[in-house]
Image (spheres, rainbow, N blue to C red):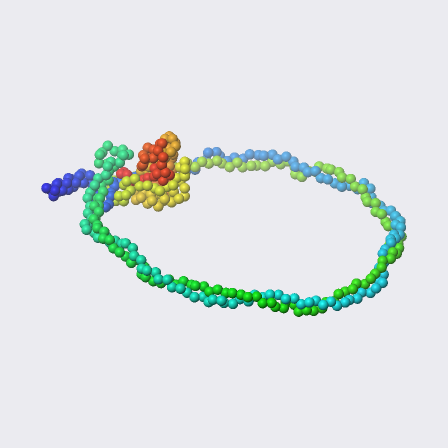
Length: 411
């Protein structure tokens, strides 16, 4: 009876697959999406002149500067003046006993010296380390893997009235069955470890001669006496006294540059407008193989800055490596952005929409046609856990709700 039901099930599945125009020769574990070839557009920049260039005349006034001139009002002259002799009293030193010297004994000096020697030499010691073991296991396949066709639910944002649109046919694999046998594994066999037993040094002190005894010479200075004496320092003479000339300063204004006219060119003003130009008309519908994982919402691990919808360089790198290669295969993608429950519902909704728009705008800047992108923000309306308003949660739980995802959609 079970075999009969299974045969009827296969017949019904085959009829359904023919009705859905499913791809031929599917492979187990693969998913397929029906794609419509989109119109191919490109952006062109057109520059237009919004204001013509023209000339204007600017008049410049004459330029002056003030100069200062020094003029002679009385010539220089000379006069003579008598300078009398100059005398002074000086101290004269007279030697009353000549200098001599005497000898003095300087005793020797001693110091100490430290001598080191090896009191015990270095050696080594051995320590036995026993063998160590760890548990292990071996897995054996007891039933091979198989596969079966399965149709997904209709996408929630599908705009078609046809119940067969916006669905994915996946050839779902049935995993193999295994049994695990426990084993004991030798990690490290018994061995010895050698350690050093260091020796040590000792020292003793001995007294040594630092300086031999000697003699030194002591100088006995001479004895002198000071007497006073009046002497002429400068004889009488005359000197010429210079009477300097006298000057006065006057100011006058001189012309540096006469007035002139100057032509100034005012450049034209331009504006650049971007327009879309159709390169190739689309419309052809085909089947395309896609990774089964991306037919469901896949998380882009973007760490948005708090309250920000600006893509960081790391976020752009994640989009380039995770999402851009998927879009370059020709499929269409839905971008969804979510927030946690902290903050007002209105601000969270606005923030999620701006983050979804930031991702789609970045993909358009990388050459992806806008017809292949759908971006939506859901704010805090689709939480993945219990962390709603008023519930105390950890930062890790809140971060699970603060996510941006993508999935492949039918075209």
